Image (tube, rainbow, N blue to C red; front, side, top):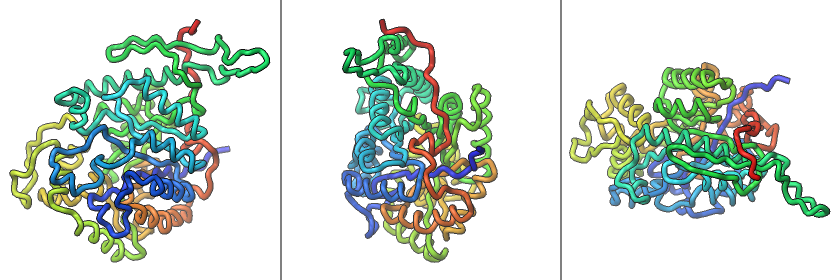
Length: 449
C-alpha cells in the first residue's frame, strides 16, 4: 500500500513562545520555562491535534553578553528546564507524539548522550529524537573552560565523529539480547552484546552502552544547520532537518541540494525529511492577524531587539545609527554561519535599517514569518510542500499557549480539509509518524567476550 504524502508538523516550543516579547503578552504563561503543568498542557494539545513531534531547543548557557537586555527577554536560556530531563517527564503524560530535544556535540561526550536518548526512547515507547547542533551560542564556551568556540569546521568534524560513535553505542546489543530467563538464570545472551572499541581523532569509546537497543533502533536523528558543513552532515546521517528559509526559491535550493547530497551518500532522498521553521500569526481575518502581531511588536524593548540581532550576526551594532543601514562587509561568524548569511541577505534584499531588521528578528529569529488567515497561511505552506521546498514545517507559535491554540483551532482544520495533514496517527513511534525506516543494527563491532 502506497503511503499518501502528508505534511510533517513539529511544535517548536520556546517556553513562552518565539516572539522576543512573548512573556509580556497578557495571555502568556510568564513562568513557563520552569512550569511543568504548562509544558504538559501544551504537549497534550499538540498531541490531540496529531502533531508529529514536540521540539525543544537548548543552549548550555545564557545567550548574550548584554545583561540589561537579557533582563527583559525570557527566551535566552536564563530560566528553563534542561530539555532531556523535560522530555522524560513529558513522556509520562503523552502517548503518541514524538519528543525531540537539542543537545550539542561540542560540550558533551557521546556516551552520555547515547545513554540519555536511549533511556528516553525506552521510557516513551519509541518516540525520542535527538537534534544535533554544534553550539551556535558562543557564550557556552565560557562554561566549559574555553575562551571561545572551536572553529566552525572543526565543530562539524567533531559532530560527524560524535554521530558515528552514538550510533555505534546504540548498536551495542542485538534487539533480543536480554533473555531475563528466571528458570535458567540467564539475564542476557553473551553472543548478542558487542563493544565498539572506537578510536578516533576526538573520541575513544570502548562500550558497550549499558542500556538495551532503543525501540526505534536509534532515536530519530535530527539536524539543524544550513551551512555547507551542516548540509553535508545532514545528508550523511540526519533523518529530519530543521532549517530557516525566507522564500520559495531559497527553500527549493536547500531542499534539492540536501536531497541530492543524501542520494550521493548512498541513501534514498526519502530517508530524510526537511522541515523549515514557520512563525505563523493567524487570525479569523487578516486585520485580526495584523492586530495580534502589532500587539506583540509594541511590547519589544529596543535593547532586546538589538541584542538578538547582534547575537545572530556575531558583531556589535550599538555604536551604529539604529535607523541606519546594516554594514556591507560583515565578517563571517564562528557561531551560526547560515543564519548570519540569511539575515544579511534579508536586510539587503528589502533595504531594512538596523531597527527594522531587529524588529523582524525579534519575532521569527530569521525564520519564515507569515501573518494572515488560516487560508493565507495554508496557501503559503502548501506552495512549499508541493514544489520541493518542504516535507513539512516546524511550527513556531508567537506566544504560548495562545499562539499554538490558534494554529490548532484555525490552521489544522484547513490543512486537513485540503488533505495535507493527518486526522489520526497511523502508528505509535516517531518513525511511524514520519514514515522513516527502523535502522538495522550495524555489524562493525567486536564481541564483548
